[in-house]
Length: 364
Ligand code: MRU
Image (cartoon, rainbow, N blue to C red; front, side, top):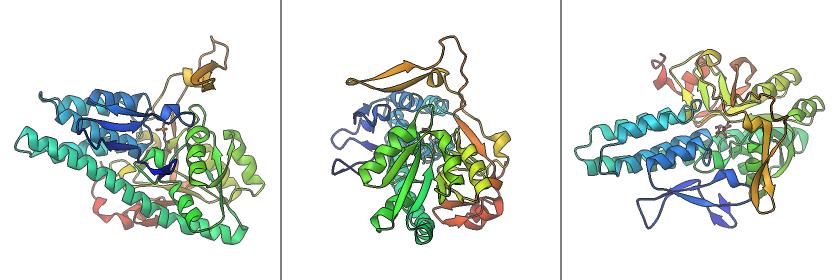
């Protein structure tokens, strides 16, 4: 996508210096657009942990580039780097997927130099594939928006968290269909859940949609059910951090409540699922998907711009404990359909395997 008129991805290798990977520090958006360098795998791991980069596909891409940085080191630190990166965030399966793919590609290299070249090629391939996959998600999803617009005049899409280009290498997953709709002149408007506690919707999705000229309105997380009851949401499209082969979907905390409200109101609820976010080894999303717990400080306080710096203010009594599960699991029965790079399918093992038959035997 373009930022201030110039094409921009979320992660790239420095054009002049192959020892530097560059990322956008997403903690400062929408207030400041700052690009920062990653020079070591530890910096890559810290960028994931501290959420300078976030979103399942981008977390995977950052891990792949971090392994490339590890492979450049004179000492053999690749195994340590893989373990360190894997420990950063537990829910998005893209992390494991990218690490395993990079390690497998490096495994048969004959020399340290070849291993490094392979790590770089893998990171580049993961990024290019992510962009291509997301374009496909957009193409498959836009038909849903077109249909809703034909019925309602303007398609009102509700989304949660940020599954836009900032969460991927480029293009985005759940928001890709809305970008395409806008390009094709299909009337579309997006309800953007603020997504407490870290406000990825209010800060990132709203900023992205604004840059792309997509009509949108930010709402508090509690407004979605009310809007659905009033017929003001035609469909929901959200992203995923890990989808079980059964179609159970883990995504940002609060997604499940939106799916419940959508179900009660007959509003179609779709999930945009790049195949890198499918965990083919598990069936029972509720029992088997690890849910990240983050610090209570994200609940008890809120960050925003004050003057020219990002500041945290305290919301709760300072001695009230706070609990902060970062993701929840939406059972497949509440999901109308999955939008994958190979087309739409039902949220079920049968539906997924019809599109991805090569994974029939991968269950753990
Ligand atoms: O905690 P985050 O910001 O990494 O959570 C991101 C999400 O929940 C996204 O919806 C998900 O990663 C899909 S991104 C295409």
